[in-house]
Length: 424
Image 1 (tube, rainbow, N blue to C red):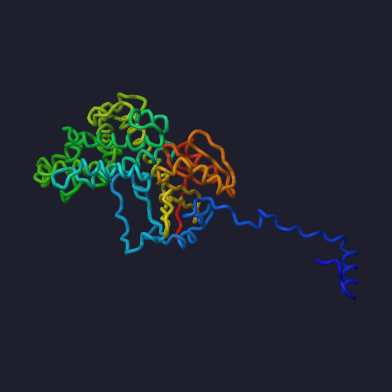
Image 2 (spheres, rainbow, N blue to C red):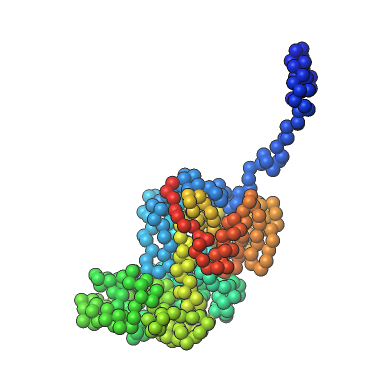
């Protein structure tokens, strides 16, 4: 307020001021208060923030399917992707997470997966198909990398299992997943594995039943049940001719349904308590032998299999965001956790292998802070959130409140995870 006043107004102002005491000067907003908050995520997802409501989120990224029914699938079968109209891939959208999203493959990783699938797969109805190898290898990678991201599989163990195949922890997931994929295919050739294929046959004899495959892998079958179902469906059943003429195809379906864990169900079935201990080789010798795996890799499979319920719970109540327009090739899709109708955690997959070494420097410029680097992880505090770039086995950029991931990784408990999903 100006100190110069005219006539009676000046007198009144002086009297009132004397009666009320000296007037405090109004504080002016600081630069920090007037400046917009620093984005917590890269440009393509810059408008997404912790605490944002689902309603606002889905206005920015319209849902391509019913996101209230999303559930992560690391066993069984992925739901089909929603149909896309021409040009839809250029627009921002959201959908449920599939194994391809949880795998978080970089460009070079996906190229390797595609090449392997085409070289090993075939088009004959009697052989393992290219698409089954592709889907199975992606699923196996999702099983491994998701376990790392959920804090249920250590980088050190993964890197040890990849010895000779990876020079960095970032590169360790895919070769281990590929070896486990080979293990599932080898298991399908074994006499016991063939019985499993027969037992899991769907009623129409055209596929392996996804629900049965999940039940089997989780330890829901006993050896006598496997034999009984194999006899009723194939040996003396209606699927005999189909199985004998297309056995290779069904080995591929086991890979597609179970990823790198094809022989785990039989190993569990052979034990009275159905428990496998990664620190006790005798508990999973059956799996290691019939899948033709080395000890360190078999140990990874057992660790992943044991953690699977917690890992799927960890990724529950999530939706996937895809940016629109000119996509920044450094980043893949974003996975967003929802609780009580709000965003509580965000994860962005790393995409461009060549850009990964410079990501920390580039993010530091945007955040206005160099961050703190320990090993392969650089951490920043941004607009009240913790931002963590992990260029190791987790291969991701994560934004959270600094508490949720720590509590889950430390305890393996689902109590710190989102417990409900809200409609927009």
